[in-house]
Image 1 (cartoon, helix red, strand yellow):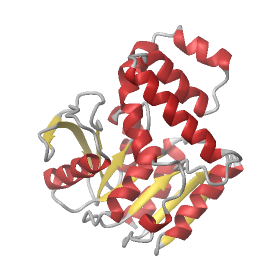
Image 2 (cartoon, one colour):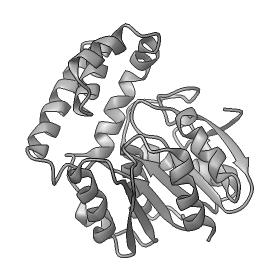
Image 3 (cartoon, one colour):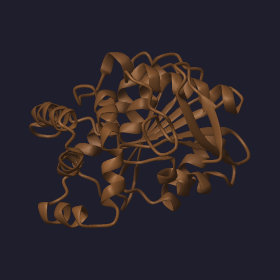
Length: 260
């Protein structure tokens, strides 16, 4: 990240701008930084000005306590001011939930798009699973067990135990543990893990909700539910894609949507 701005509460935010055309701010999901969505930003840069940033508590950005979802919306407001005040928003996974929160709050954005926000309404036992995760994550982070917190998240995503143990032994693990406290941020953004219908009804801008064709059925239904809950929603499926969507597949869809 080569630029800095400051949020309302004094938190330093690191960001990067690439390309030219309509402005789009990309919001990453859990266990990720702005660099995670940089390949997608580079794909958008063909016809859009793409902005990537480290959400608070990640990468080169600060993390002024206490945390609240409203502080992350203020972060987006600060970025909007820094890049000229006229932008659209895209968010992936829980980053998409933050985008929807921001759009519902009245943040002045042109339009929004999200990829597979993991609302668990259509997952069997989803509400119970989310409540258990929240309780265990809070306890692990309070006790300083960052590795256990990462394990809880990886298990929540469906990663098998053997793969989790391999991850623990990999060179990436220290970086994952460094991001562990931000899992509480994403958990707060997701709320109880269920679709916030009343909040989404307040979104006044067009929203594109995208899912991967190779993702689980409950994820498709969650994305479709987002499109149906907002006043101006569109639902789209990308054949063959999973939650780890390929930038070369998603990029052209977003360029068409944001740049027309």
